Length: 339
Ligand code: NAD
Ligand code: UFG
Image (tube, rainbow, N blue to C red; front, side, top):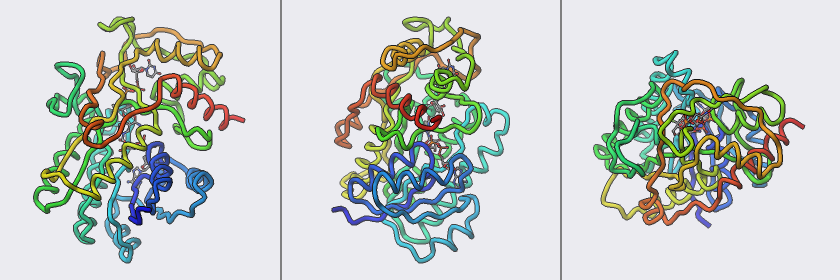
């Protein structure tokens, strides 16, 4: 049993909640901070139900340093996993300052708190969005940061640079995981992605259309230079992604790297088009989806998928789930919440 304490910010969100379960399954002790801006308290109950473990939860806004310090003054942690951020690309274009304030402000407070408490290990949620529109495929961790396609993307580029500088300056070990497109849900059907309002991402839109909450799915563009004209992404099952965090935490704890800051792509290495995802969903779940092809969505790129060689080798991690597992578990979750 790994008797280590992990502070998980944004731990009640989609990726955080699945990661907490896998951390607990691997013997870690987990505390969560979240302000519930994009999640609700029922996910805490679900994590506790699935794992049978009671979790310490702090309802704190991470942009409020005094409150973080106040609430966590007497706690000690071995590792911080920082998930908390706002993640809507569309909203970030409308309100760029809100994204800078929340995402960069929270990160700065977390770094300040880690320094104050002498916590030396950080795992950060980055995104393949830092690559912008890549020059060559698949993208490796060496690929440069191109122009960010949105203010949200810009917050991830800035965050990574801040963490890199901070880690080298204070000799702290940090890892950023650059997630590709996380989809799917826990096999229990008890937790999953629950967008507040109209979904922006493909798979939640598919499941909400299939269950009748939405009339029709709009497929944003079929004139891209891809196999069937629709954009290609590297979809990764949420439980595989959660387990990449466990692997990265273990690496941080047993640190052998000479580098203070490391980054890893977390994807399957395979690309699927929008139409392929829709068809896999229909075939696996035997339900129809009403969709129509409309114009392109601003900020979308044609194609991106990962080279995951480095994470496989260095983190000793590999994705195990297929696109069929992803669409099957998403549908099970959607049916469960709409019962
Ligand atoms: P999510 O919105 O489900 O979870 C984020 C959590 O952070 C929420 O529970 C929210 O309430 C909390 N939060 C936000 N701002 C906060 C603040 N100021 N103080 C306290 N809590 C705050 O999102 P997710 O999909 O689980 O994403 C987690 C992380 O992964 C984010 O950093 C996101 O940018 C990143 N990421 C997500 C994706 C994706 O497609 N889901 C892809 C790449 C990277
Ligand atoms: N799509 C549709 N219709 C929809 C929603 C999406 O056709 O209703 C298409 C998009 O045009 C895109 C693909 O489905 O081609 C995937 O779109 P998502 O919104 O699900 O995912 P993105 O690749 O655009 O972006 C996601 C997250 C970002 C993150 C990025 C990279 O939304 O936060 O992955 O990690 F930055």
